[in-house]
Structure formats: structure tokens, C-alpha cells
Length: 310
Image (cartoon, rainbow, N blue to C red; front, side):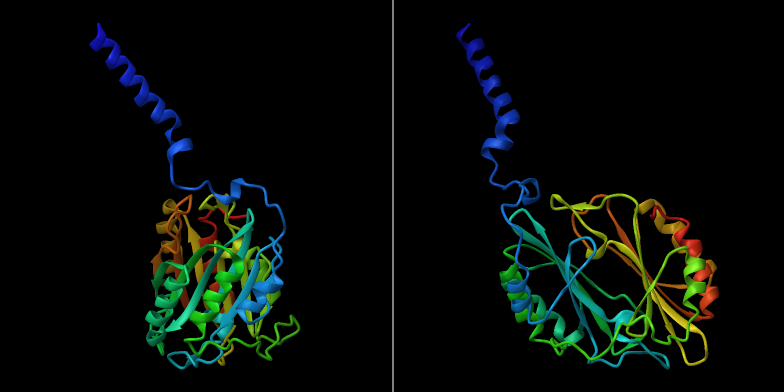
């Protein structure tokens, strides 16, 4: 009998450990998103640490742009504007009393590993390193990053890493005014795609969010932190346009979108992930083409029709 009682007592202890162990014995802290913030973050010290001003987005994210205005990147005889395919960025969002950071840095091959080391030393993770384009000269790489903690310290880490590159850290004199003559019929593009674009330094850009919530690390990722489909148009000298960007897809959408792009003469230049633990799992399909702008827009619209977007 005593052995039976001991066995039952041992079983009860195991059950209690299973039921209550996560709460009482886990060393992993609860996500900060579950805790209401005691104060709003003052972004001014963050901007000072970053070395430049950011812009508050409509979803409350503070976003910094780091376009590669120092590089002359060509695909064939076409020169890419920095905002077309070379627009690195870093974004921060308050989560509890701390901040979460995500970004996409555009780097030359010789900059890649020094920046990686500096970011690791500063507590900033890498979540993807890859190409977005094909055949560009010079070749550029894209490093996706993630951090969580004190926003000023994270900004200091970013600034230290970027100081190892030739990325201009001071504002350029370029303008993003919508009155620019882009050489594109933007109203027609809006109508074909079913969304409204915006002018950004000589490029017409669309940002199209997914319909479902994207979660990672205990918080909802806003569209401005890299989970909206991006479509960019840049006029070419022959009166046509080139396009690039990336479709943000769930697994079941990948091949239908790929087929729609190829059926419309649009090249797929990369398919990969940008993050490590998002839900639902996302795939990013990058594309490129140079042709009549309206024709390209119709092909892009066909691809968008395969997706769950707003």
C-alpha cells in the first residue's frame, strides 16, 4: 500500500509541475506586449542616437530611411533610383516599456560581415541575408534585422554598425513631393492595381497590407515594419517603366502568384523568408520587369488577385 501511495504522490507532483511549471519555473520572461506600458517612449533620444530624424507612420511606428544614394546600381543599361530598390530602413515600435526593432539594410558585399559583427555585438539579431535582384552591378545584399529592448541602446548599435558602411547618415536634398513629373500615368496605375500609390523621390510606390494579423515575438507586426506587399514603378528613358518589389505571401499563395507573374512576363528574382518566428509563416517573392507600365500593372494585378489582401 505504501508503495502505491508513493507512486500516486509522485504522479501528482509530475502533474503539478506540468500544469504550473511554465508559470512558476520557466526562465523565459513573458512577452512585453502582454504588459501595458507605464509611459510612452520619447523618440527624440532615439533619433539622436540613430544620428538622423525618423518619421512616425500612420500605425505609430518610428521609421528611419537609409537609401543607398552613394551607389550607382545598374541592371543592364538601366540605373536604379535609391528608392526603387535600394531603400534600406529601420523601424521601431513600442512594446511594453521597451521597443521592438525590425529593419532591412542594403549592403555591399564587403560591408556585409563587418556590419553583421557590429550588430551582433550590439544585441541586434539577423533574421535573413540574401539578394532581392538578379544581374545588378555592383551586387548588393539585403540584411534583415530584429531587436528588442532599450530603444536608445538599439539605435546606438545601429548607428555604430552603419558607420562601417558608406551609407549616407545625413538627410539628402531629394524631395518626395507628389508634384514630380515621373513620366508615368499614376492615375491609370492606381486604377489598374486597385490601390493608391505615392511618389517617393522619382519612384511611384504601392504598399498593400495583408488582410490578416501578422504576429511575432508576442506582438502584432504593423504593415510599415515590412509585412506589406511593395510594388515600385520607375520610368525608363524609352517611355516605358521598370518594376520591382516583393509580394508578402502565405505558403498556399506562393505558386499561384508565381504563375501569374510569369504568365505576364514578370521575372521572379527571389523567394525566401525575412523573419524567423512570424505567424502565419510568410514568404517574400521579389520580382523585376521592364516593359509598358500599364501592361506590367495588369500583370501585377493578376498576382494580387491570388492573395488575401485588404
